[in-house]
Amino acid sequence: MSSQYGVTIEQAAGIIASLSPQKDWYQNVRLGELVLIAFRDNPVMTDQMVVRQEQVIKDSLKDPNKKLDSWKWDFGDGQYSNASNPTIIYPNSGIYTVSLAITTPQGCTGNDTVYDAIEVYSTPFAEFSYAPLTPSILFNTVDFIDKSLGVVNQWSWVFGDSLGFGNTNAPSFVFNEVGNYDVTLIVSTQYQCSDTIVKTIPVVNDYSFYIPKAFTPNDDGVNDILEMYGFNFSNFDFKIYNRHGQLVNEAVKNPLWDGRDLDGNFLPAGVYVYTIKLRETLNNKRHEYQGTVTLIR
Image 1 (cartoon, helix red, strand yellow):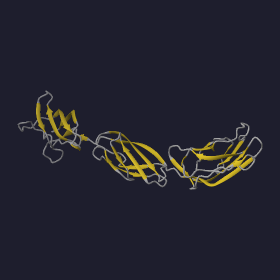
Image 2: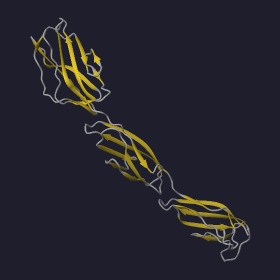
Image 3: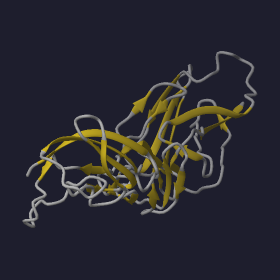
Image 4: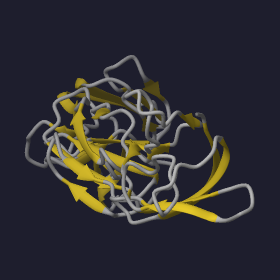
């Protein structure tokens, strides 16, 4: 009586290997003679290699005792198995020869070797850099560069919570709001081996203003006027009050104050209170502040 046996490779997600091209083949054998194994042509391989022995044609033997008794697998990379349905992981890329030896309960043995049976492709290592290192609202265009290891030919970028996408090795993206944004890069090889990396990009507020604490309006050409300094602000409303809470001057642009009242009269030395309302230029966000300034004569 004869039976027919075969070996196939199951499919899982993430291709990293394939069999060397060869046609399907099986061979009828008599129990007590060599039992041959065969690999199917070009199955999809993964890093979780599932090697399974199967009956390709229903066993014509009705005697339940006439079955295989042992399996000895050699996967070509120093890994072995005595299981009938072993699962192995190839940790390194390369081309591997697979051997199987079997024994029946009657002591009949068979063995075969398929040379260059499995080719395991290397998996890329995802990495990227970006500039500027501290993006801001004022400098909010960020340039990304792929720094992945391996032969990568596909890139998939996701900026923030699906705010934008990219498919080149060096995309750019504009972040219009302050916040922390997750940027995801998935890189793949021609064999669809892939790796993913996620980095959080902080985008900070780029807004500043400063009003000096004192000035000396004595017409000596040094520190004679009060001015506001900074960037990314516009449309401000500055008001200055005396110690009695009376409005003495106001301004909507620099210089803020020259030490005079609304009628152009010189005001005495002392501490004055100011309020200022302004808006950021880029996002129109409103701010209100209060402080003091000392007028020195």
